[in-house]
Image (tube, rainbow, N blue to C red; front, side, top):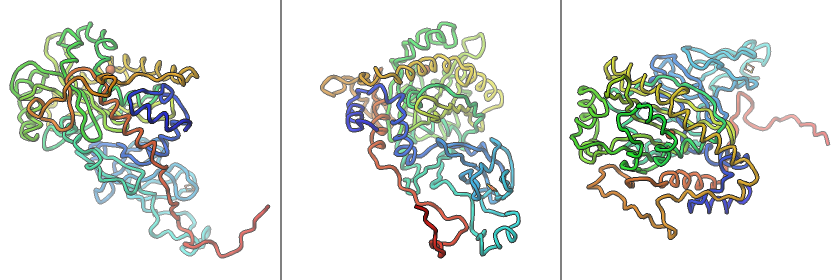
Length: 466
Ligand code: FES
Ligand SMILES: [Fe+2]
């Protein structure tokens, strides 16, 4: 990457070289240094509930089969045939005890072990020519889960997922652990946008500032109970561990009253109180903050909101999980799931899904508003003039680097990490700091894995043609 030291130094002081949002060299560095190491979300356990269930998901350009094997264990296997490299499973999801490669017909159990190799004896001379025993589709180097969210990492030495998430796990529970049963997901809807992947992640992490402007029309048409989008500035932003997000400030009330205010039925509120720690309860009940959007580094985001779903003033909450899957420096595949508590009443699930579809997903109003901006930003960032521009990403910080809004004390905000009321690009800077740290790391070294051949170098002389 050209001028890497300058680029990273500028990013770290909140001055953003505009081209990082559309630069093939930056994208290569991200691939080799960032996505080669960090944890990447691939699926939720509720997408593979039964033995044999599978979904096919990507981490950048690597395809993985995420399956529940015959023993009930969740696996993530590199979807490349061990023979000549064909993509083994071409369907997006399904249920199968085996996968057969379409090219020459090698077949694999749903735990990755090779079972069928046509003409093994005639073509290879049996085990002596190709040792079948012990061969399996390459497992993802690391696999771990939290609240049913399955992540993989290309780094075999990745820290445990819980450690990676750090204190952000506290906030992740609001979205993914509203009862002892956890959540189920529906989707994903998938579509591509001509925008750089970082923009969505930054937006969801902390951009409360865009709501009054970008989403004016959503408020104007009366989708929300609150008449003014400016209410956003009464909420806070928080950052903890590997993620951060935004909240809305709710009117006075108890934990129960405030959750009822955003539309949760009493039985769900009861389960949340039983499920969450006293501090998790206090963020809502004592401090009056309700979680909204958030991002986990590098490219997973969440959102929780409560629009009106009928011609009354009643609102209903929904949760969405979304991934900004990079395709290139200027294209992203968005995967958007609807998330709901497994124990929620069926009527709630139905209306919550409607609320989600109105706001997010490929036809959601927020989604449409947002993406127009992100595509435009990406286009602008691809030109040569963008190389001369350092964007100002310092909101909330004075010239001397100090912040002028005090951090909330534990008495004001019970959640971990650092939180501040009002607008500020603290979280976007945190994300980009992590991004800069990764871009400074060397590309991850990899050792090829031997498939069924001799362990040592071939004995016969190799003819070298000069
Ligand atoms: S490439 Fe899969 S069987 Fe040959
Ligand atoms: Fe938005």
